Image (tube, rainbow, N blue to C red; front, side, top):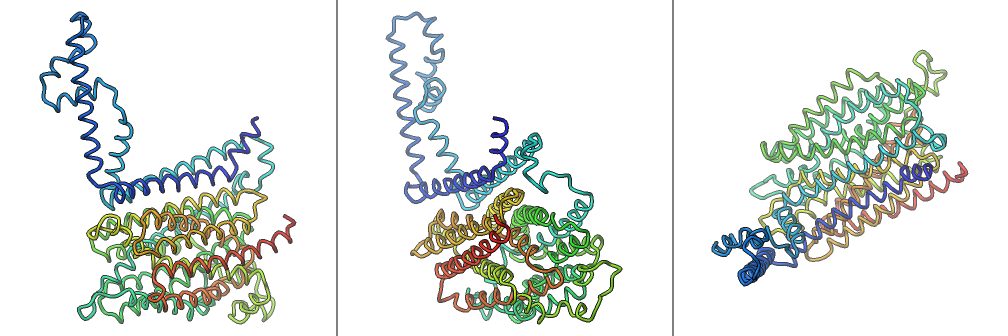
Length: 590
């Protein structure tokens, strides 16, 4: 019995069940709220309470009348209902209070729940604060389950022998590497996430020639940034491998700070130039830190801990993003829509300082060889060229499939980033009225909490020896395609259901939380470290091409059409991952 209980606690299905419970509770909160707002009039709860009070008063009068007609003694009457005379002579409100204290109420629990729902859905800010609390409780519960299951495995020697990295004591070198990487990485990501909730509203708030910026103009600003990533990305990746991944990480902090600082300007050419700089910085964000970690792990022989480290990185990243969302709301309330960008620069500077002080530089050559071993021939010196990286990708089907999945999933994600503020803001106005405020920072924190739940689920699955990362990724992509399709369906009507769009987007964000550690694990498995930054930049070319094409037709597609295109891209990505899974299973015999 003990062994069976231990296996059950450590099962990923327990995590999956809890993940869906969290989503179910969140959905019920939104559904109850929508019912109270859309089906029942606002005064319904008040009238229902009045009817119940009238019924209680009537029962009280009948009860008092029965006591007065009773033949029981005064002492017995006093013991049964000591305040009956006072209640009989009091006002109606006092009688109602006595009834509440002395007579069991029918429907009291329902009234309490209704009052809680009414308070939590009184306005958009209260609704999303309540939703964030529910999701946070779910994340804490999910993490607690993981800790208990880990403890039960330590007490079961048979289960311990069936696992690998998760049970053995981590060497000091691993802990030191994780501390150095994660401290700088989380600061860097906090600065990056700080701009997430407000970048579209900030651009849209600009006024040119007396006219507020349209969504079409905002799309063009984003488009030039993605075009810059596609054009300059490979060269930036080559320079990162040549001059160092640490230098590339610090360069990201500098470039991204300059780019988001430009949002404070009201000059259109400054906004376009700033977005080009942001596009170049993003090439470094998605290659330099990861390449540095892979290079250090390869040099120290710690590659088997990469999956765990990526899980920690992106689980913490979700927590950082939640915090960034709340900090962004606070900064926006004080400094306006550009406040979050100013605060984000502070975190980016802190990340540059930490990585500059604690990271050792590694390059494509020094990661592949020891520090004291020079290149053996001229061919080694040519490592990192764009042509060689392209030839490596072209000759390896598995690399092509990994690149296709990355390009398709992240293209869908960038379309989602552009569309969710408008989709949710429209649903909130339908839900609460045209004057309702959209709390972008809190909504962003809700999304990031869902992402945290996905990261926690990945962390549990990756520790199981017989679970292939490719199999987990296939299931995740299927779920992502379904959720994005649901979002397209919900937004296709004249009005958007707040419950429907939030369920779809939160489910998709859970998949995003699983995606980043998954793709990091797969890239560490299939992408050669000698050309890592260049190859990852090459993956960015089709990614950004897809995004540019989608943004060019964003006005014609609309919100529903854009989400539908994203769902189609995720379906293709699922097919690519299923093929990669088939190859991996044939190679491992799993």
